[in-house]
Image 1 (cartoon, helix red, strand yellow):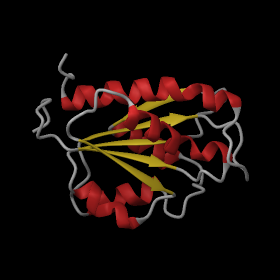
Image 2 (cartoon, helix red, strand yellow):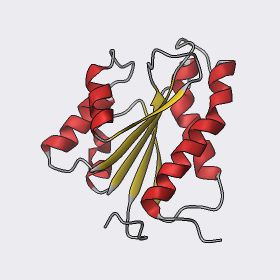
Image 3 (cartoon, one colour):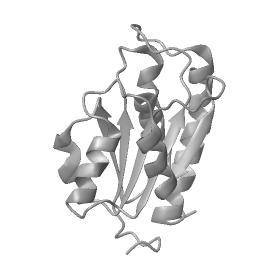
Length: 165
């Protein structure tokens, strides 16, 4: 059921390498989102690191999928953008090479081949300024975290239903 009932299982994947500066923004957004209160029933937060096909069973078990990652948006560093459903698929199909071991496109293609790609799926991407060795995010990307968290939270509330007052 995807009508906001508590039975919806939303998988939230924070993607990136925290040792590659702005590439780690997906993980930082995931951490901030997971700590935001009140907690959302039905949201499963997973540090997906640099991805792996080992995540496929998690995707197969969810009703909705939210990906958080650095994304080449051809925008100013720190820009936040959402791609939903077919728009996400198109964006990933046209994306440049991934710095990850297995790209999101590969993982989602595997889910599609098994017939388990969630109908509800969104990528929240943050435009990096730099992707190179370093643990710190650039200033514009660090500043974008609250906007990315707010957007991700709004998506989850739409899927899972409003938080009781």
